[in-house]
Amino acid sequence: MSLWCGSAAAWAEPLAVIVNNNNPVTSLTKTNIAAMYRGEELHWAHGGRIKLVNREISSDIREHFYKKILNARSDQQFLRPGTPVAVQSLIQRSDEAVIRFVSAIEGAIGYVNLSSVKDGVKVVFILREKAD
Amino acid sequence: MACSNSSFRRRPPMPSSHTLWFARHSSIRLLLPATILGILMIPTWGFGAQEEASDATTPQIANKPDMYEQEIQTLKDRVEVLETQQNSIMDDISQRVILGGYGAVEFETFGGSKTSFEGKLEVLIAGQIHDRIRFYNEIDLGIPEGEAEAEQAYIDLLMAKWINLRGGVVLVPFGKWNLDHFDPRRDLTDRPLVARQIVPTTWGDLGASIFGLIPWSPNLISTYEVALINGLTDQFSTTNGGLQDAKSSLRRDNNGQKAVVGRATVKLSDQYEIGVSGYRGASSPTNGKTITGFDIDLELKPRGIPFWEDFEFKGEFANFNINGSSTPSRLYGYYAQVNYHFWPSVFDHTFLGEPYTHPTFTLVGRYDHARIATRAGSGSLNEDRFTVGLNYRPIENYVLKTEYQINNGGIERKSWNGFIASIAWLF
Image 1 (cartoon, each protein chain N blue to C red):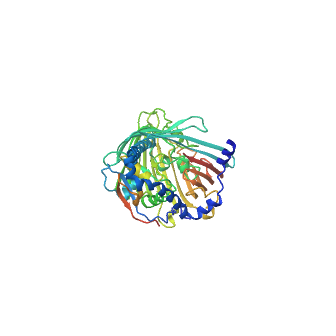
Image 2: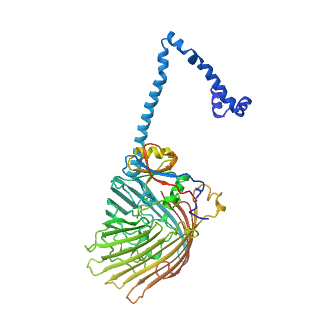
Image 3: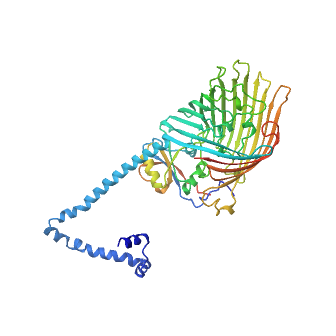
């Protein structure tokens, strides 16, 4: 019956939030990341636009990320205030695709399984909380 | 032959008894090609040195693996460059222009009036022309009135998180409902009386504003927006519409004095929000009438709290005083609403549930009240409304709503009770 209880029960692997290697940011807090994905934080401290990378709604990793970082369902949309326009994020359908995008685009931020992290991206936050 | 070939292509070959035998004995399946490969390679491994001396073409053959590796690497590099270019283009497109819209079709039947279908379609065009300059346009296509109108059409200069500049046709920052009036986002079809008669929602006006966000702590933030606009006119009504007809309709200011309007909020954990708004402006060409107003709104969405996480609570109170006017002299109203989200598992494997990730039913209860007070002999007008509704959302951006209204009063629906249903969508 619960609206917010998702199906990510089996999710146990740590999740890494990654940015481009050229991004001077070295670490972020859960609150920083939530503000970015909610569209409250639009630019990096050094000036560039934050480019959000997301996974598809049905993916377990997105469900886990939304629940633990954003306290939201995986299909919740965060809107630009005063508009019905959702905060824009680019959907990539695998960890590899997220890493490829983040490693190629300065200002990009995404999330992947920690075990998938490769050269070319920088880990700025690790979520070790397991799904409920 | 052609016929037999094409029929062969259409139908997959039936596995022969040999194929099935191989499939069952996978170790033999692997061993056989390996053995054949081994036999083919024996001359290279065993007698390669002797043949190298006797055959002049062998060094070229021996170098080929290196050549192939180089070519593969070159191709890999090219693919990476293409992927990077593709990612840049995708990123650019995703931000440059966003084209969308939302619509609604509504059916209502109330005692004493004809049944009716109403509709709405708005086109949304948003985007960025620079990392720090973005625009937004919301055009009401004018269904059913027939006149298209810009509900919002502004450009933002994003200077810093705490201060930004907006100019154009702005959505007037007064009350939560006005800023979040979009049909697919609402759980009931009809707006509450306070958002129809008192605050003239879908209220846009020509002007400029500053807005921003101030974080106080990781979980506590404030937002604000203060605008200078042409403001409300003196075309208000006591009988129907309240302040709706006083909107400027994007025409020139009728009195030359700008109205000041603003809203500030405090948000806790993105779950609890309280907002306060204020308005002051001259309304008549002779400056005889001044409109002042204030609004308080509240929205509670408890998450992660057992039992309560399926509920939402919303409310708003608004008041306007019109100095120099006796009909009306004061307008005020309020509403309180409870939403309960649920999904019975019995629907999981039906057409309502199966194709969707998070389908939801929402049960809604709302009470609202409005009062238009006059100092004239005709007296004041009141209306009370109680609404019960149920809606179904297969996805966030599509909703099928039904509701029943019980009315008592003399402003809008008078004392007619009725049924409303609608479909609203956002794309």
